[in-house]
Image (cartoon, rainbow, N blue to C red; front, side, top):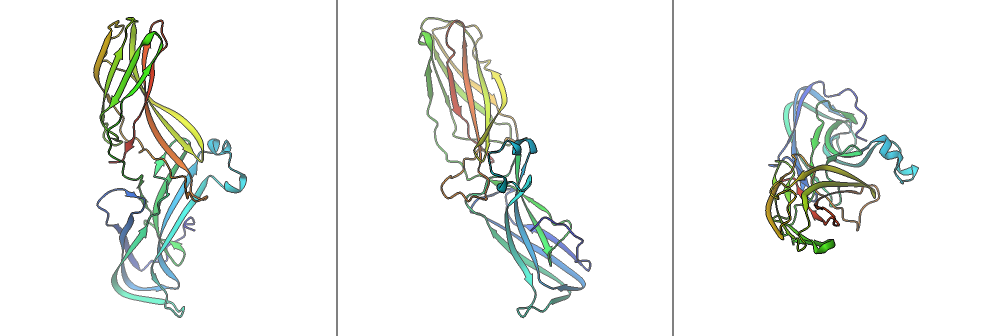
Length: 303
């Protein structure tokens, strides 16, 4: 349902699909609202219905899918449609006879509610999740009505992150903290990081680095992707100071997909379980000592 494209039967009409959302994305438990504009030039016959479908699709990389531990009954192909929600715009008469529209312009509003456990729109080398709208007339897909929909995770919680602390050999202690609880994935945001190092035995600190890692999972199978590794230039290389304190800045790349952790309770079996998380791995590279390493969670939002 929603897959086979055939020749349009609306040859005597013009039509457009418009959406009324002020944003370019939707969240779970919100509603997709729009209108189907129909201009019948001569006569239009409706044997069954004109409807709009919301379709959710999982597309897996073949190599990734072959390594999946899901059983064969769960993998019919690599283009799995896990959601189809149909909203009727106009139907035939109640007694089953065809409805005929003659030479008029009609606007049909529609509302499609979104559930609570839908994974967000995303695209990775292993798989992608996409949502789109399509209009059908008596079971036939209308050309040029395919409309991509971006589904975003729930709005992130605003909190003040707590500092993270680790102590390595020779009593070398590093404390790192972030100022915000989430960052935009769109506009190359600057991430301020406070770094404090206590080095009582004055061991040589070669450099302090920050590695941004992305962890993506599909149905429990995890993959780690390194986004970048940067040297914190605000901290002098090869320093032997007893105390090091610096306010550093890291620029995130644009267009990172937002953080998403699914609610495992009540997750329907047919819905893909997707998780997307990010962390900064802060490392103080020491000479002749165990390297302290701190992992800072960096939630990414769509805002």
